[in-house]
Length: 322
Image (tube, rainbow, N blue to C red; front, side):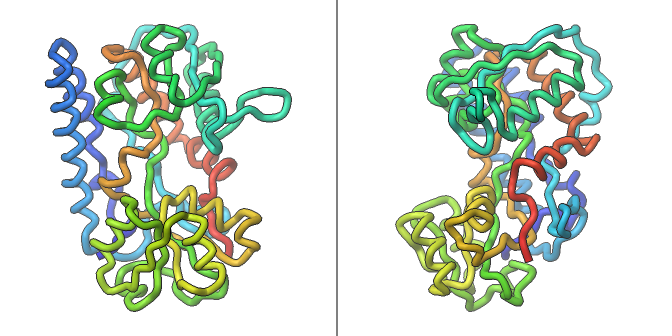
């Protein structure tokens, strides 16, 4: 059955990132083979938390966006970390992807802009740290981190076993989730499995979203397409009733020019173990646990203060159009 974020206390749905951190820490002096094994074990544990959502309906307990659409919390603060004190960090060098909107890109005049850049700048203000930014192609970020060209990778590298073996990651500050879009005027407001039974849903063939949809929405009529553009056009031209995919991609399309104003993002975000590799986190050089914890602590403070959600409202399609 499809399920929503927010129908139960968020604390019950915490992905086990602390378990991942412990696995990383315990394997610092082991071989690469043991490191990868520890990461795989931690990632597989995400399936346990996904089960907590099964059978839960409705949207509640999430933050509210400006137009009434519910907005998820992107991270759960660690109360134990909040009580810890760390050595003062005076400056940080952030490595950012050069062209990866909405996370980071070169704006007018060459200045870096984007959601992740804004998060980092807010963190630096919160922690009173002097920060600098360098932009590189996304496939060179982890290498540059290992070479000491920066202290923190801001966004870009996916949280895969290979990258876990080369860097330590914070808990995500932006979760990868699935979301539905439909045409404006459609009467369905809750995209749960019961409400969508018998409906035609477009999705990109062979993706984690297609597999998730097939497993969790067995009563819908799935229409697989070769590309997102084809799946989105099918919704716009009424060949399907809904579109399912990554919430950022679906949201930006619904609000963008290509959709011609046809459609809207439905309230409700869907977390899943299968999507977690694409969540957005900061990365530090492997073994730098102190810096990782410092970043997590201040990211938690941004979450608690509401600044993360405010930045999301400014940079991301967190609210749907009616």
